[in-house]
Image 1 (cartoon, rainbow, N blue to C red):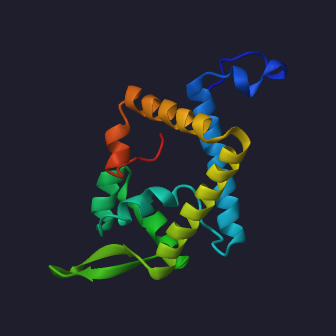
Image 2: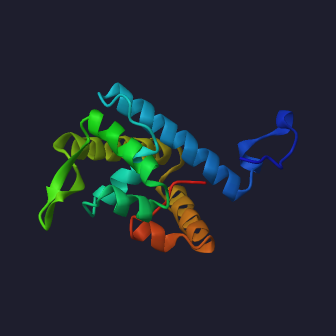
Length: 166
């Protein structure tokens, strides 16, 4: 991330613009959730796995279909799916239409990972609510949705088609 703000010694989070603050807060929240997942018995899970999992919540694609949807190479998807497979979160099954084609699906452990992730995120939001109250939290959510709209990203989020950064 590029830094164009005040000198490092003068930084106060309250003074950051919304886009920088949203990016930093999102990354910090993601790191906290990942640490919690590792402690909860899901070691090896990383943020990049979430982009694959979000697709698997609504579809059972092939590696090629997944690569096309995420806008990354088939090699990158194969590597990530292999990691998730070794961790027990996904499996490859023969497609009903053609047994030579392998479709990727979440396993029970993978669905457990999704539920644990949701619970960890909800607990983090509850901590924020306890610190600031419900109204400011709702206002912050509205501001971030407005930021998504301004950036043209709402439809990607709604359709679970958020692509990895870069």
